Length: 295
Ligand SMILES: [Zn+2]
Image 1 (cartoon, rainbow, N blue to C red):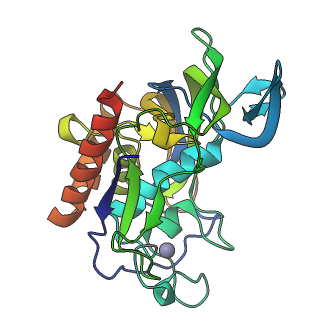
Image 2: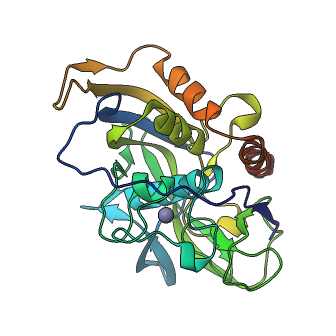
């Protein structure tokens, strides 16, 4: 498999105090974004179960009440990985510096996506099939081993307790002999990102982490099992949104997302990135676009 590493660009992270869930902070937004996820290659969000297809046994993909879904946890994991890379996150540092809700406060990623004992301020619903065009189910052959989940963290130099880089899968391998069969989905899913007390800069970085940057910053999301075989490439779009602007100390006015409002968020997000983090995002985006372009 053509794996590539994106090195940790961050210095020591800043810990922040935790934002409680019962407050509405001024200059922050709460709300919902409706997102569409279009598969570029078939996606296999593993269900941890097996299905039968004739005489073959295959790894089943996630369903809810029989309907194919893109689990919100998978989407969140893929987005968090990129967010960690472009913020000063505790994950890319010595284990001793990992966030602790009570002792240290939380880094940018833990404070937004959550940590042990803290639910976070951003969540993703399960993606459900768009109607139309809906989602079709296929059977794909992928090589063994079969890494599930999102991008692997690791050290490019070998085993180490200090995570220095994220490993992503680029162009797929040529066919391997040992194969397993997996159920995979093609088509369009629709899901929601729900957030509370987030700044426009944080929202901007989330949109970058969804691959929604322009030009060189654009990339497909990669999630699910069978990624070394090229499965799990998706493009995300923002369809619409509903926001609560906070008035002093309480929920304020509810209003729809304004045209091009996302661009303002992304400008704020971008201005919070130093050169090293911007370069890491560009490296990641380049690698994932190459993956998307390969057959
Ligand atoms: Zn953290």
